[in-house]
Amino acid sequence: MEKLFFYDLETTGTRFWKNGIHQISGAIVIDGEIKERFDFKVKPFESAIIEEEALKVANVTMEQIMAYPTMKEVYGQLIKLLSKYIDKFDKKDKFHLVGYNNASFDNNFFRAFFVQNNDNYFGSWFWSDSIDVMVLASHKLRKYRSKMVDFKQSSVAKYIGIEIEEEKLHDAIYDIDICIKIFNFINNLP
Image (tube, rainbow, N blue to C red; front, side, top):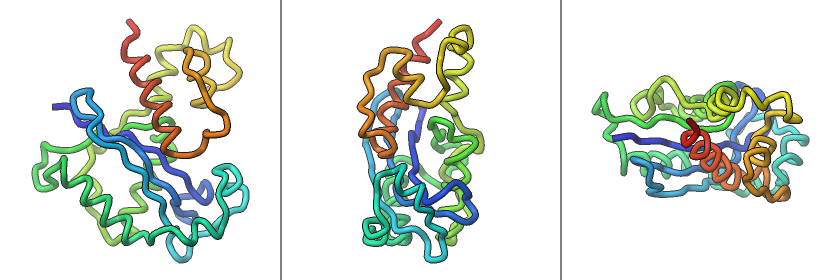
């Protein structure tokens, strides 16, 4: 059984050890079928540095993110969600983490989120390796890369014919839908 945890984060900056998460969104996909979507808004941890530029990118305000549910509340909801699909005590039952550029960015923030919630057992839920859709796309589209402006998720999506609503970009739940479409496109290429 293939269990995929597609996810995207919006953060208060680019340094996982100083900045926090303010949105965790994604989809649970089991054997190719979307079982559930999720979209958690998160108040960053108490000492998180919140950079104004990061808030602008995500089109949120300080007032909004400070009114979000606490990390502890969201962590509890997340664990409840994971527990519906994974037996954390079964070492053979785990999710593959899947995202766009997640290997170099989101994964570190996500692991830190667990540690900040006093949970050192991230590996009970997820395999240690992850699937980075950007890396998959880079491999499959390497012959066309020189024709592309950049390799941002939205640029890749447009290049392969996925319609993008620019004003919705950097909302994690929208971004994950684009990621899933790219993933499915790439997996259907020879």
